[in-house]
Length: 123
Image 1 (cartoon, rainbow, N blue to C red):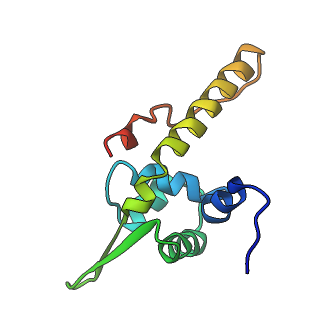
Image 2 (cartoon, rainbow, N blue to C red; image 1 turned 30 degrees about the vertical axis):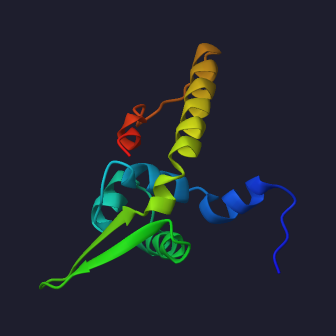
């Protein structure tokens, strides 16, 4: 039996870490192949990306589709359960964008590579 102190623990158990929220945000604009995700998320290693994708698929947040062709083609996409995280991801993005703007206003050299979080608003 698993016990959580607060609901946020259950959320973080599924989407916590450095890479999972990024994967979800990039998949929010549509299905992606692993290589495409890896290019967007450099410097993630292939091993780490594979591990994170497997965990998200295991938790029902993303789906994995294998197309029967040579060479094999695999795509990952958000499931309905994954799409239900949209508001959480948007709130986290907006909070981070505001924090970055405040740091920049204080003179800190901070950049934001992907300032547009509107892509996953289509769901």
